[in-house]
Length: 190
Image (tube, rainbow, N blue to C red; front, top):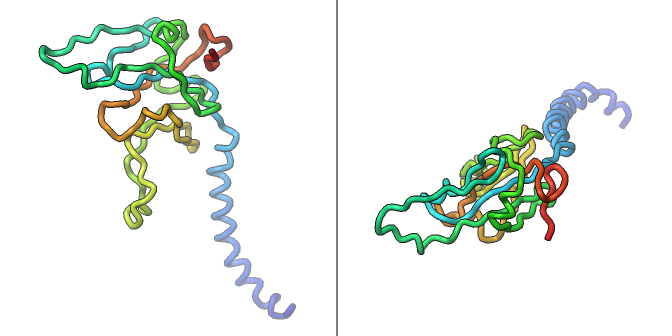
């Protein structure tokens, strides 16, 4: 047995090097994502229609409500009212807040947070596996928080993010830098 092992050392080394390289590359890609976690919460809106997409904006680092002018004979009653939510990125949960509460928040409307994260939509492509098994297809309407190789699906409120075009489509408004709720990026408690 020992003689066989000694004779096969080049074969064992030749087979182990590619396997070790795969493990090394996988670790170098995925290990850093365990140490990179988002810290800054964000404000988003849900509901409404095409016209209400611009209802809320950020002016001078605070939420501003814009007047929406609908075309004549436009049936606004068929769309749900626009609602505001704060998403806690650490707990991955959302809570609804009123527009007056949201106006007290200090917001940064940049697409990238001060700690380097972005809220992005799914690609709508499940990759090669979905071609064969029709599984793992992510939706354009699913939202993720992403930075480099780190990506995590956002657990938004139950009625947000469904696969219908305007109804419950979320709209990122801004990162909560500081505000009436305490420290930098804190989550409101009531």
